[in-house]
Amino acid sequence: MNPANPVNPANPAGATPPPPLLRAERLSVRFRLRDSIVQAVTDASFELRPGRLLTLVGESGCGKSVLAAALLGLLPGNAEIRGAVRLDTPDGPLELTTAPERTLARRVRGRKVALVPQSAATALTPVRTVRAQLTETLRALRPDVDDRDREADRLAETVGLAPAALDRYPHELSGGMAQRAVLTLALAGDPDVILADEPTSGLDRPLVDHTMDALRALADDGRAILLITHDIAAAERAATDLAVMYASRIVEQGPAGDMFADPLHPYTRALLDATPGRGFRPLPGHPPNLSALPSGCAFRARCPERETCTDDPALAPVTPRRSLACARPRVPAARAEEPAEDAC
Amino acid sequence: MLTATGLVAGYRRGPDVLPGISISLAPGRVIGVQGPSGCGKSTLIRVLALLHPPRAGRLELDGDPVHRFRHAAPAAQRRRVGVIFQHPRAAADPRHTLRRIVAAHLPADAPAGEADRLSDLVGLTPDLLDRRPHEVSDGQLQRACLARTLGSDPRYLLCDEMTAMLDASSAATLVHLIRTQTDEGRRGALLVSHDPALLDATCDDVIHWNDLTAAAPRSPGTPTI
Image 1: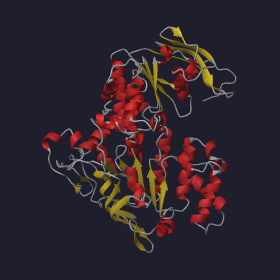
Image 2: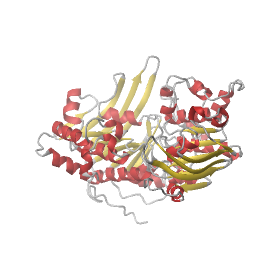
Image 3: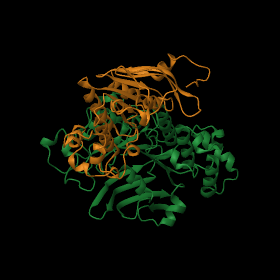
Image 4: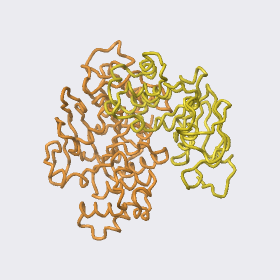
């Protein structure tokens, strides 16, 4: 089999992959409640590299959004973070989990790491035009820009929004236009890293596809993107890399093409089989409550192979580019793996 | 049979949203209506569910014409159609437990334990029933909304983008529950969605919105969609 794969312009085959812009190592988040502790994220490790779009998928309530909030220091006061998140900056690496609020607010949010929020229409201020909000953001994040109106038009064109739409109020925009308007706000500070948290929920399929293509174009442009979604079809369209999260843990991770073609973890397979295009088979049972996780593999209660499995698995590499957390490890089918490239 | 003939509907003094739509739904069938956002699918559901009076056209429930809508609709007709909405959070009272939400549409003479039976039917475990909406996922809350709708034993289930906010697994679960409900031939379901893959995998028939409206006689005031 010819191992030729689509060459990513920012990461041509053969060249050394660029260093990650953001690297999370064993990131864990706990919420302390009155009578319980919620394990929202457990030991998440991943890298965001320029030119790559890492998509994090999983069922509602598995901890995906908490992970994004943790990267930006936007967690509520009762959250406890462990692990490390290193952001590459011109002044050397910056540890985000311990950075003071002042540093996050003045140097990181919007400037280095931008967030595309979940509900575009409600993220905009209803009483001001998009242009007013965008030029205000430009003034705050990039005071060196002289002609803010022209820069706003340029940003709008980047994401496929007609500049005239900037002069409308949010309620005058369709769902897809509001989505693109929010994307221009995220791009205003020229960030290296973009976190998109469920940017397409409630949009119809053509708009989802459009948003995914816009995000992928930003990645191809050299940005590093983390997309969080429960929409498997959207993930399949845009992702270069995929991470599957179940009950606070990443259970499988690797290049998106390989994982869609040959999912290894029983949960990944079940999740893909639940999509309309691949059988539409529902998973039995419910995801576990994050404040009362069972010991060992949290998926065991719903796993079709639970009879023959007892161990507590940790995420471990199965090939140079794929890793898996399952006590019954398996190797990918005899598909030609891509030529050795650093694991993502 | 739920039969609509030439339904025209709109809001206040605005243009017609439904330009004269005819559609029918028989028990035992699952019909899908596919169309883009904002085309009028939800308005169709609202009229068929007796929640919005049409400007013109005829609506028949099992042979009886429907003359009155919303709170004026006779209870016997109202209970024959059940709706499942897109946003379960907006459709459930945040102050109530799931058990109370599920029991909301049960008739006064329902046997004890009927709410538990319905909850079990949609796959809600007993520990979830004492929780309030903010303590469960969207998928679990949508299951509760389906159980509530089944409480009035409706003959027609109208599902308005029921799975748009849900993850793949919850969506598959809900759709299978709807199929199971219609398989015995006692209930029919109408699913409106913008997702062709979902409808093709679920429905006996899928009608495209453009085909529904193309059949309608176009009046000069009818907006193009």
